[in-house]
Length: 173
Image (cartoon, rainbow, N blue to C red; front, side):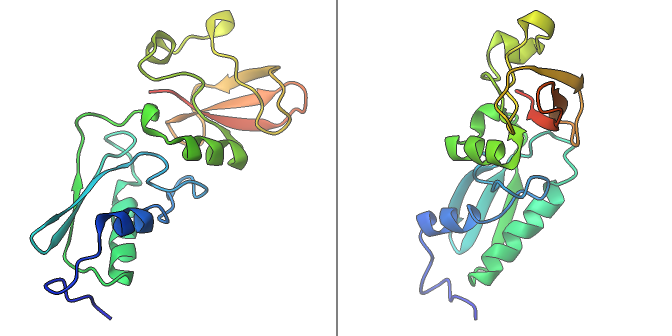
């Protein structure tokens, strides 16, 4: 069933709530709204414009995200959709919501320990100057970075020296 846009346009708060139900394809525990990928939603006459910013310009999930958004809106009866990819300003981990940070941690991925615009975030301090990364499983701060790159380029691989479990850390950028 399609909504006749000329008669009724869903309000933007409803659209935002529908987008908040669209899971990130690489981290399904968080939504694209939680991650701050959705930058704007607006009506332009009878066309719904949704602005998205990928986590990085070469992100292979961008096409999947656009398709998932389109499918979610079509299910709600909106068929005249323009998904606009916006690369500037670039996405930053500072756009992850507080709810998104909690969902990441509950999923076993440590959210960024500091703001991306901080000195530590910009230069990626390591060793004794690095931010303390607590294990999301046991809470220990006795952890070590195993690799600068994890399951995706935006994450690093860590291991807890107490519980010996590996985990991902979402790098600040």
